[in-house]
Image 1 (cartoon, helix red, strand yellow):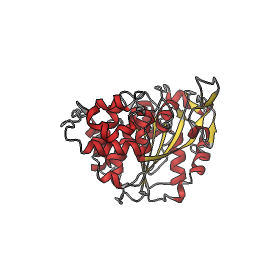
Image 2 (tube, helix red, strand yellow):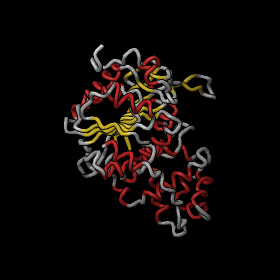
Image 3 (tube, rainbow, N blue to C red):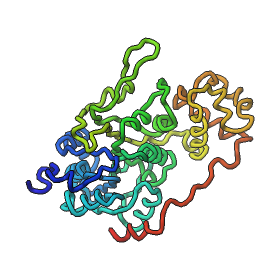
Image 4 (cartoon, rainbow, N blue to C red):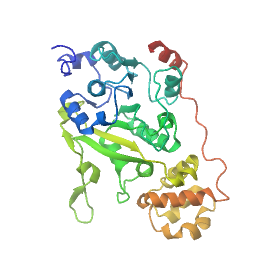
Length: 359
C-alpha cells in the first residue's frame, strides 16, 4: 500500500504505535471522511485557514481533516513519544503543512508560547463573527479529557486563548461520559457546571458517536428505558467500536461559541464562574440551600431578590435563571472580596525549549 492513499492505516500500525495510553482514537479513515463531508467545513474554511490539532494520537482523524481542508498551517501537539514519532516520522510525515510539536497541550500556557513564537498566526475578528481563519480540534479521551473540555468551554466565557481571536469553532472527540456532561439538560439530575456553561456560551452538536455508548437510562418511577440525552439520540453518524483504537465509547462534538449577549458586558467572568462553581457543589439541593455556598448571609439577602427560584434545585436552573443570579450577585454588597486562589504556573523549564525546537 502506498502511504496515505487513500489514508487507511497500514497493517503494521498497532505494532508501530504500541500502547494506546488509555486514549480512544478513531482509526477508520473512510468513516472520518464521511463525518467531514457531513460537517461541510469547506463552506466556511478555505486553504488559508490554520488548524490546531491536540493529541492527534493515531493520526487518522488528523490526516483526513488535513486532506479535506488543505490548511496552510497544521499544528499538531502531541506529548507521548510513540504518537509523536508516528505522526512526525511515520503515517503523517508527508503532510507538508504540518508542524508536529512534542509538548503537552494540557499545559495551558503552552498556547501562549506557541502564539509568541509564531506556530500559528490567525486573524483577529470581532466576537460577533465566526473566525474562519482558525479551526481547533482535539482528542480529549484521557482521564483528563473532561477537565480539558470544561476549560475550553470556559475560555469562551473569558474570551481568552483561541477565543480572543473571535468565535473559534472546535471539533472535539470525547468519551461518552464527558459528552453526557456537556449536553445534559436542566431535566437531567446528572447536570453539572459544564452543561450549564455550555448552555450559556456555546451551541453543541453531537456529530458522531460509537455504538458502545450507553444511550439509555432507566426511569426510576416507570421502569421504562428512556433516551439518556436527546442530542445523542439524534446523532447523525454512528460507527462501530471496531473503528476505534481501544474499542471504546467515543463521541465527536461540534462546539460553536454563541454570539455575545448584552448581559455578558455587565457580568464579570470571574464572578460568573464563582457562582456556577459554588452552586454546583450541591447540584441536587434547592437554591434556598445551595445559595448559601456563595458567602455568609447569602440566603437571607437573596431571598427577596431570587426567592421565586428557591424551590428549584441547582441542576434545574435554566440559562436565563443563571443570568438572573449572576446579575444579583454582581450588586451584592457583601460578596467575598477574593473569589479564587491564584494557581501555580503549569509550565516546567523544558516547555519553552521544546516548542522552539520543533518550529
